[in-house]
Length: 249
Image 1 (spheres, rainbow, N blue to C red):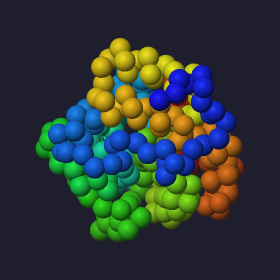
Image 2: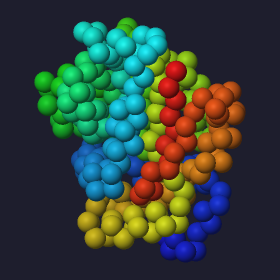
Image 3: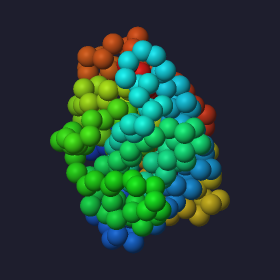
């Protein structure tokens, strides 16, 4: 693979033109090992911080978002939940704040639910679903939708469809936590991956992910295509290397 200094970061590379190893076929053991390294990446590079900070701004008034302070749990769905590490973090966040939650993770990969269940204490009560989020119709209405490091796996038209689904499905709000397309962040990741000895999928896919990632103008274009008013959405940079999109209703 070329060094980051030789790569053009000005435009997003479509995933179909630059595949990741994680998106291909592999054994369950390889997939689980990759997820464990990704959890370490999120811890070391403060990957949970943007989502938890956004949740801290839950609106108090007006409308039914106030119900989360009562006895009825807020239903939070993580799209592309992988090994479930984000929902485990959200469970801890909710417990510390006395907020009742029902947590659901959904992922297309048939290994994801098994890997997440193996890594998650049963007492957290998190439900793991295998399937396409856009076809997900739960019995319990969805209050909040989150996703982390999933959008860069999608083609532009798939992201537009996901944005429309999130907007139609989430009653309180939605949040996308993903990478910023940045040479500096890509270079830092490569250095840390070599130092930490992360799984070979992560060492390969990390630099690829940064080329498939986003800048603010990408999200402006995608939000417009999804017919979501830009003034209703925040697009915020989080260092190191994250660019996040959030919407409260």
